[in-house]
Image 1 (cartoon, rainbow, N blue to C red):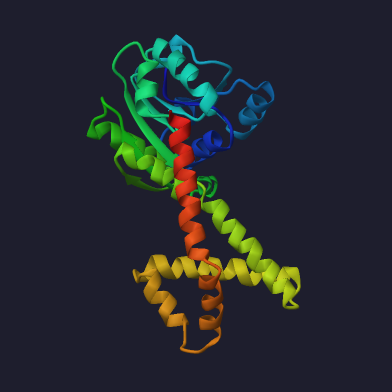
Image 2: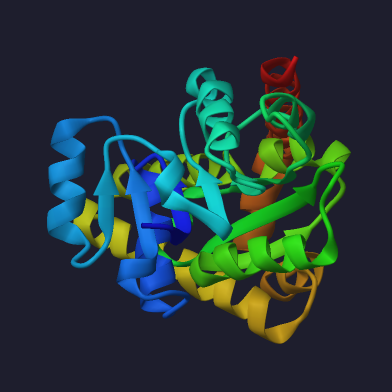
Length: 268
């Protein structure tokens, strides 16, 4: 049986994409398949996704003329999985594998293939992800539209050139971890000032949620919103002066640069 979409890799990212696509009614459950080599994970996916085919391997009969594949495996398994997809007749593939260029995936195929490379981040798990997509040598606008329709089911999508994907990987890919670190530190700071951990957690997470909504909905720049909170000689100004003195801004610049360079290294 040929499927409309096959997700190769049923881990956190692959299962989040499946859940988002089904919730958005992108396709019917019977048109979707997930390939997962772990028997234990296959059992969990079968229980989670009623009507979806959960397969141990990708085979020739699973691929029709319109079948697309989403590659969600670890980098060291990606080229082998792409090679199998090519032998099965796949002609359109969306890769969410960090650091793996479209050229390397294309080289694993016996003929021309439309490869779209993407870097989603973990908020796709709650359908609030941010993803960038870039097309390879044989990609058309229809291929990019297809990829955007998939990732759009789990969040926001931007289009970039492939030379910018490593920068995206350095910025939005690890950014949830950067923000969690900031949240963790602020909760601890509240506790150090005498608040209970429960109260401090509610204050910090609630403020992050509200601040992000304000930034998204008002259209004002972060500089403008920061200035509105910062009264001359006030408490916010005192705190910001301390952060700037500790080079927090520079630390974020260096963190993004380090992550982007690591992405480039993975692609070599």
